[in-house]
Length: 370
Image (cartoon, rainbow, N blue to C red; front, side, top):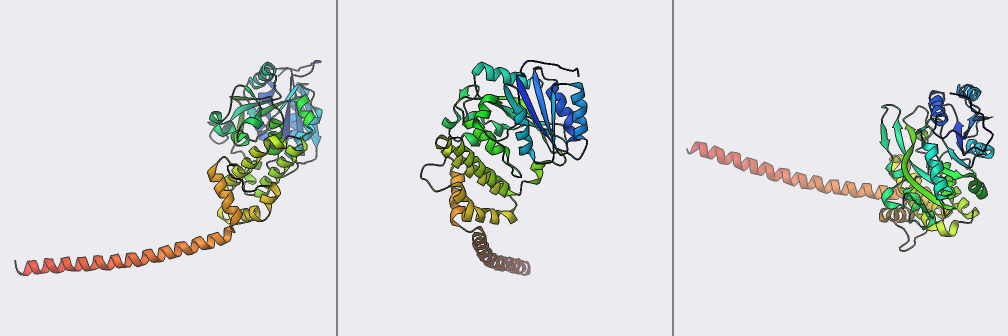
């Protein structure tokens, strides 16, 4: 890895928040520093790592002047990304998590796409790398190609259900820095889903976004200590992120044109979380929605407004029912049904026994009078 000394503005700034990823960090840095596009800067924000991550960063920085290190006390991934954004000097920027990695020409592809199409945001594809098996798997939900106008510049606010069909990860998006700074967006300080509001608002504030379904980013799954693996059951983080999302749409003056897509996305996330939560947490989730969060997020019944009937049906049900009361009622219905079935089974058994007895008697008489 040779040293690089550049005086011209970097074409792309790569921001890498780093927290206790010593096992994967070298591979991540190598994938960024060995890109076909070399005029880049790499801003690594060490967010209070307790392992050897900072030492690895310093070793790489000694060999390659394109690396900038920010060292701070642990504040979370959102704060680390915010710190990195302040230091950006490139024309474009993107985020890479410190346990993931890029394809070798990812930055060149992103840069050429942005320049050739004069866009503020490039949304590109990613896949999943399984840490345990070494296999790659498609993540088709990241860009749902049959629901989106791909390989062209678009106005996201004019795409029905845009947020459902473009994943809210910030790592598979690249931004024009001047545009991004004009929005004054910040990552919120919540425990998970902090990239959702930032990413979606940054994508939909502009009317010049480009959807590139080509896979450029590799997302590491099944790794030790993954934050996403430990927060799946903490649904309040998701609800807080949705609230931040709405507030950011309002503060950036793009609420009116994106509100319908936002409301539909809330229902999408509610159904996703409801389906993935263990049964013991569904009751509290549903009741929190009914008693507080639907109001906080502004979700109300509106005829012919929601795109997906199953999501609307779950919204209607959770809005009007106590989940625990519904479970009790369902339990009673099942018990009643079971009782009826037992009675029916008992009658069938008695009829069968009579039939068998009749058959045996008939067989006995036949043997006597043979």
